[in-house]
Figure 1 (tube, one colour):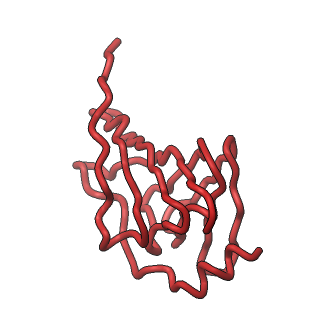
Figure 2 (figure 1 turned 90 degrees about the horizontal axis):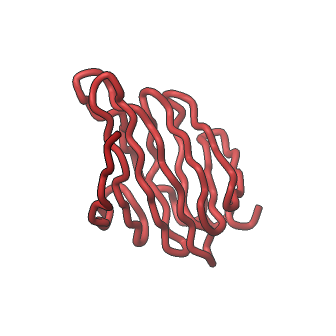
Length: 135
């Protein structure tokens, strides 16, 4: 058994997010595990850029109301307790609704040899985000 103390929360890079988003690392697996888990907190209206994960990503909402969108225009509204599974290489974005905070556990796997499994893309346009909030 191993107890890992709480690690410092960091503000996420503005290059990959719109608005204020904070990340607290929870777990980074050591071989043979490649699991990575982080608690991510979004302020109202904050969201990720479009991105994809080579091995997929699982989001478990812990607080607030969130939005998860895909390139085909699908948007799901999430609430605390919901879990969203994004398959490998599906381009998506996620964030808080316009008027509430949202937190989720982000769970994904690193690639072999510790390669970053995430490919960051362009920001979600403001009009697309606001339309998603109306659904």
